[in-house]
Image (tube, rainbow, N blue to C red; front, side):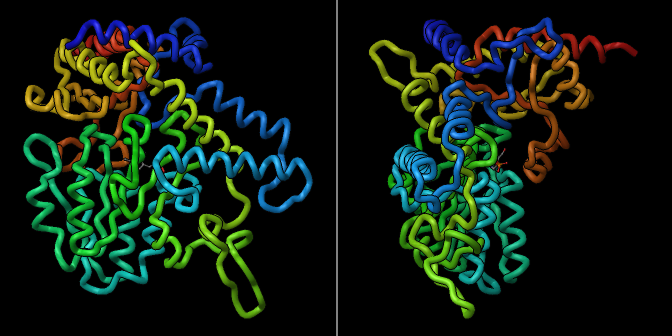
Length: 429
Ligand SMILES: Cc1ncc(COP(=O)(O)O)c(C=O)c1O
């Protein structure tokens, strides 16, 4: 562990924490400071995001792309500005950046849009790491078209097995869809290799970047993926907004799946033609305040979290140190078993998102989460919408700690005190 980096990062985390109103207030008990360690579920929102949305609602509420009065023009400008910010954040063209309600909707839309390309006997390659959002839409598509699903498994080090991927991805493969970062293990997928394998056989590549987006810079041009999806609420933005990136030629050639106002170029009683990109894929009144909030979140990440001034700590490096710190502290709790990155020595220096998934013997994860919450500590318990992965790991549910840039070693210390309490509660009888 790099103690100096941990200390310097802590100072910055404390400063960043002041931007998040909920972290400053008292915890639910009224006594404890809130210790928020459920960032993989959703992150807290900084004032910049809340203010941007508030401003839309209090100063220029109106619909976009329709009105020709100043208020509506302002709303349209801010909405489209948000798109430009988000597009530049992932190195995409604005025409390739579609606003959706979140990762789930993005993946569903793409699975629907690709349906005509899938025929009986085709194969869709997924991984065993997938969140249900990147699993069920493909299962349903396979059912509708008579296609087969194939799953890339894990090595004993809980990494995606690339040699298996090489065997599975072949001429019958039409789609390769995978998560960039596992929400249970924190494993980072070998994206370029998987996308390269898909390209070789002319299969569509779909990247679920829901967990990656807040931690790692995303560059769709470098990745060379066909589609990529993420949610605003996991990157300091509001709920109800997400992004579907699609390669321009594909978004142009595919038929949209949602139809209605604003996505058309012309409509007659006989039929309709589609608007230009990106609006072809955004039917109806869009999520205006949410998109503006997401634009503010992107700016916050770029200009506050990831800003590189001389001597400033890289917050991802800090989070890795905090992750190591948390592991060391958590295993001091008797009976606590960390499920992810088990083969720690080998793995800890490889890229790994700051997620720690654990069990405590027979104690149900819901009991763990409930008891630690009495100390103002928020963690997740359950199967984390990744039931098949839990099955493979041999557990039905787990508890999960996931870190973000405002977390500090003190948060971990509070967690450990609370976990000790859990152990004590269940040590009788
Ligand atoms: C890896 C992964 N994919 C997809 C999703 C779904 O995101 P949303 O519920 O925001 O659509 C999540 C949410 O936890 C996730 O962790």
